[in-house]
Every structure is written in C-alpha cells, then in structure tokens.
Image 1: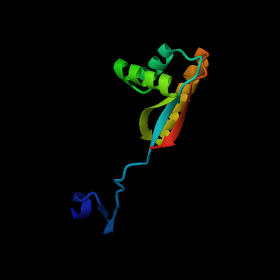
Image 2: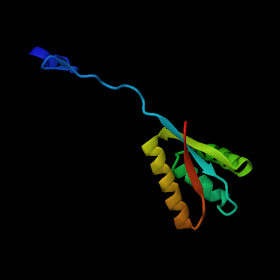
Image 3: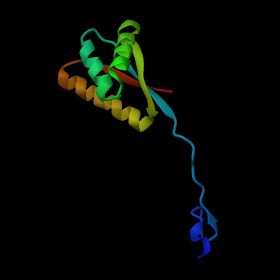
Image 4: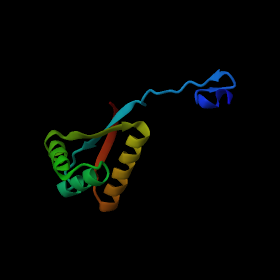
Length: 103
C-alpha cells in the first residue's frame, strides 16, 4: 500500500499545507444626506446578513458617527460586498458608499 495511507506524502515528498488564515479587511459604510435609513438597514440585512436588531444598531452608528463597520472578511469577499452595495445603491438612486480598510 506504500504512502497511500498518508495524505501528506507522495513519492517520499512531503506536502506542506498552509493553514494560516488570509488577512482580514473591514468593510466600512459611510453616511450621506440622501440614502434612507430603511435602505441602509435592508443592505445590512441582505448583503452583510445582519439581524434586524444588528442592522438597526449599525445604521444608527453610521447616522450619528458618519461611518461604521459592517463586517470583517478576506479581501476578495470584502471587495465583492462593497461592489454589491454600490450596485444596489446606484440601482435605487442612492449615493451610498462603502470602503475597505485592513482589519
């Protein structure tokens, strides 16, 4: 049977598995004077999978502090979420913006 029982070796060569997690990035949503609170809550629930209570809490932080974190993700996922938010906002006629920061 040889090395077939050991998944980390093949023909006497060790395979090194990288078990480190990818760097994380925070998606920040920014306040503006035009996007409705209801739309922000909807985006937080549908794009970032927040409960209604969490979405309301984040929306109020955005409204009062000017911005708030929506989530922490690997870069590609954070980038996709930002693009999704921008596409949804544009379609709805809102200027809502998000950004990505190392987290």
